[in-house]
Length: 169
Image (cartoon, rainbow, N blue to C red; front, side, top):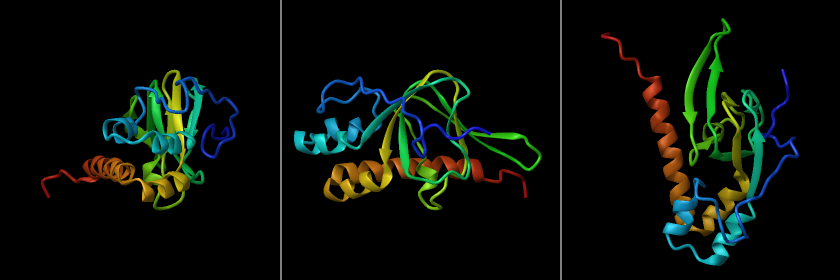
């Protein structure tokens, strides 16, 4: 079992190729909260300093593993990430596929540990956000806080669909 590549950060492959400090890539999961909501340049700069661009991760490399300590969430910038768990018999249960603009790691907030694995299916680039720092910034920026709540709500909704028992009983 290899160590996680991104959470906690042990990989030095960080790439920042999205322009200057006031420009985000078009696939950022937070771009809607920032740009379309009219966030001023100061607030945008505050958010940009929280971002670490990580990658490329190659197919088969793990972003995080079940049980790893939680410290950050990440937005997929490029590629596809699969989240999964392994049952007692070693069978893999796929939880989801995450495409550019989607966030991974939100399900780790409650237990301070990642409850599943996340693996790159192809070449993956991520925007990594320190959760303690983005949560603090969200208390000052209502649009960011609202967007973070929307992302968490969507994650809860998807999880509840998988948790349903659709049997006749």
